[in-house]
Image (cartoon, rainbow, N blue to C red; front, side, top):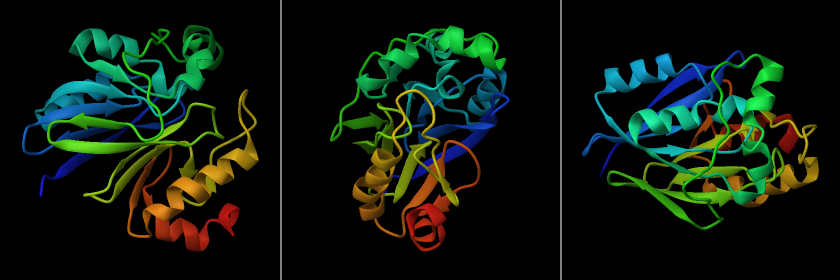
Length: 212
């Protein structure tokens, strides 16, 4: 079986989990949610000795996307995601970054918008795309069925769920996304969230107070 490798790189003052994921067989990689601090991202890329082909975005909030355009220029990598419903966020990245103190931000134009049921690929790895609105209208999750791994952005956290008090957020919609899209993936699925520690579907089903 092709093995997925991943390194989590906390970036920005919000300690957002930028994730470098790669195919061990081919050493081709994707950077997920490069929100900033690209010097740290570049160090991780160099340490892993991989070639970055893709930049995947889980949603359009500034701490997840502010460095995407610059990283694309550096690496000649295609930006894929999120869902088109987050266009309004990607058009105002610079303005949002100025308000929260994230430097060197740029607005983002994805090379490919993603829909529920799409697939993305890097090397020999394939991830299913799940549209999971609620935290933002265009939030998506990347799920590798073979490796039992889901990269969920700010949809679900260890012991919590994404905020819904931002523009476009919807608490009921977020809970529906988790119930209908994430929980059915299976209790053994490992989760990399947009902030905080890793967890599993089973742990959150059993202990997350928002899901009881």
